[in-house]
Image (tube, rainbow, N blue to C red; front, side):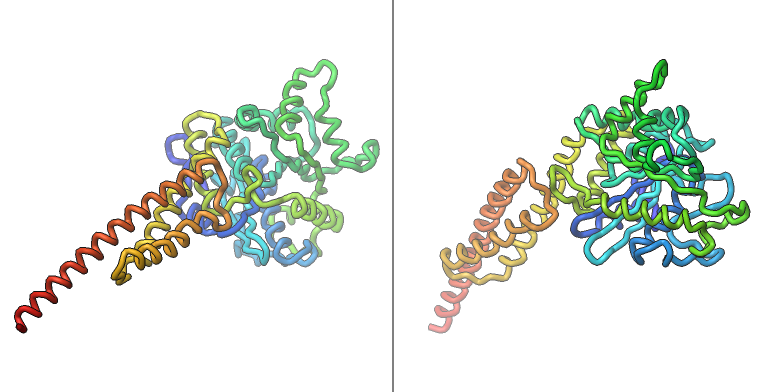
Length: 398
């Protein structure tokens, strides 16, 4: 577990080097699960349980954390917010990389609404599946809070003409849903429909538009003993209410089924690409602009292409530097082998496909052609010097 995003001391956000490097090191597709919600509402604990579940398969088999030993994301029992900025845990599972993002709690006493919006939006943009954690029922206050922190996301949605997926998780939920057939989704949809003479109908409409793909689940209070609530992370599964364990298992199964690798235009992103995307989003958010996802990914793709081109040229030079070719035909043959290997780096898994890619491949071919002429010039000069040396030696011997 390491910090991915922190405050920059100027009211903005910045990437943390350790987290950025850890994210960039992930090869292959990356599935990102983000959780956001009110501070002190159990987000970090839920992610720790999810991480163990993904590794072991069931909440009933997830061991308790040893007392005084912190495993996974930090969990506290005081009124102070534990998570600052965005923290990350990487799970290298057999078939995929899963990244869990724990965001700073909303509505804490030492942060303002603007900061909450930035954290919420960045977590949403990075996620391939987004969990919004709240406590109790969906009332006017809950709707207003989700709308307020989602204001920047609303701009992102409109600018990019996209909708986000949402799992609205209602914690410590104690009411029955008989009138909804015990279906939390039906309860959520009813709460988000326009109501008569409600000033918040506009907010409901925006939430429905931003989060067109939405699910809702409930979790009862994990324990009944108040003292146990202060040490939930150290409780064994048998100490938790069976109903809570069963509901949590259902939630984790839903997350596992819905969470897919992060993509752009249908293309899976690697950790390196995702890290570049995050930095570009941070620049936009800190500048007060709404991130343009298409332009951001175009920037990410071009930065990736430049890096690939640099590595490809280096690889070509290393293959050509020790060659001893007596003729132009021999050099040209070796050049073609090295060139094809260099160009093939643009076709490796994880490289984003955009219209700009062909242009970078063309520039690479031109650069390699220039390097070929440089190699030939050096070879010719070396041959000339060798010939002059041989001639001088022969004359001396005569």
